[in-house]
Length: 262
Image (cartoon, rainbow, N blue to C red; front, side, top):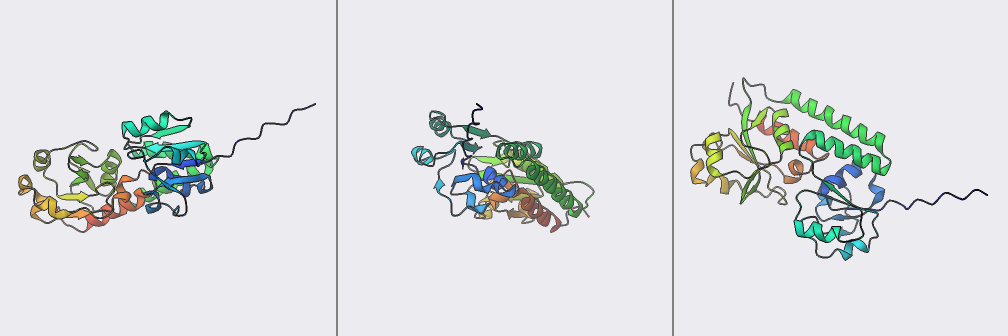
């Protein structure tokens, strides 16, 4: 007598990372989501799902356990204490830590494999590559790249992640400080960016250029002298997933709007 195959446990995902949520929705795997962070509706159609903390701040792990997830997904930035609480529970925890556009493509493929949406994931990778190629065609044609400083946080001052440096290059610019690292006012003054882009984490489009124009060490920086400080909504540059396409378009729009090197 043949035994019946064991019934597979339905996939139930709690996403503590807007990037993972945006990818899952883009590949048609939204139905597996049972909980997200309060930031996720900014980048994906998940407003009706329960809202939880994230990998930086978690009020109670029990709110996650009540949703009976088979997988919890987190991503940078992490807070050690929060992740430790999650790892102490009987949970399957997937930690994502992309640095480059290639890493993001790998994350897309990984989530596609987990959810049985491998073909859709590959299609998303191709769509993003095609989108970036189109952005690059629209990028300003200059004798040399426009010097760009993208900022993810003002205090301590942190440059935008490495994938943003790649987006800047696609858009016709060049990041002039180490991406994803703490930087000083003096470093930026010495780098002399033509443009400063503010995309402060978890602030949407509320970054304040006035704070930038008021930095004493930057009075001779070209971006300050020429009033070229711009704000891009943070989710468009800080979400390593499909929102980066719009972020690249925004960077291109800004760079095309100036004529530094005719």
